[in-house]
Image (cartoon, rainbow, N blue to C red):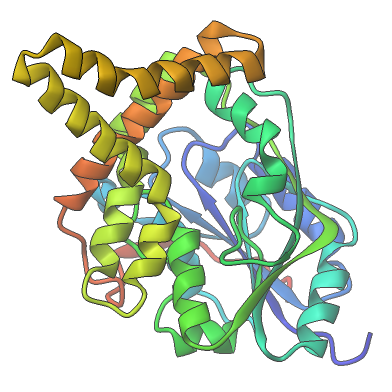
Length: 334
């Protein structure tokens, strides 16, 4: 392949000491033929993630203020320090698969109208409801072909990101890839997922209830509401609502259920409750587990509460850089 592009890899991390070395090693194996830089964008990890990454000789940058931690700030931080013509987004618990880079670069070189490209995803067997459910729905979460957004990351064209102002919204605690995809498509670009392995991912091993508690404390569950708030008054609000449609519908349903309960009418409450019971039953039959049906409702309920929380959360200006610092400069690997 002639005229190999310079690639920046942004790895967002928070307490990824268990996987960061494996992630960096997998990236280096696949980028050995390409001029590149690797940037670990850390959200003030409390373990030794940054030290392990620095020992690997990559650039390590970090937030300064812990209150700015969120999903969206990581790759935006990496982007601000990047110089690559193409930008590869990874998490610190992912392993880059063989062959993806060549396929992705080839696709972008031959399809100028596309801003980004991703591939298929492999996940381990999750130990909690969220990741077990996600593994069952991989074909829906990461659909092949042209896509509205590239969940999990991808290889992006820098010129396209510059056109839309910023990489990922530094204030979003979730759905940052959806927000990026919406902006890129509104700028006239397309996104595509190849039938080529992109990365394998290690699931969180927390029990279901602890996972939900962690998601609430980290404000990840606020992502749908924050996405809607960020899109309010913009041409792509309807697309943002489409992304969060399930959470929004369930939120409205729960509010109606609450009003029926407050009304004091047992009959009305029973009628409104019936769809929820049917939903639980269908989920239980599909997963052959009543507990899975209950977990599904609990998960949706948590996202509904998070949606309301996110709607009323002020967001920072995504075009303004967060305060950050360089922990380690890459050891001449370009």
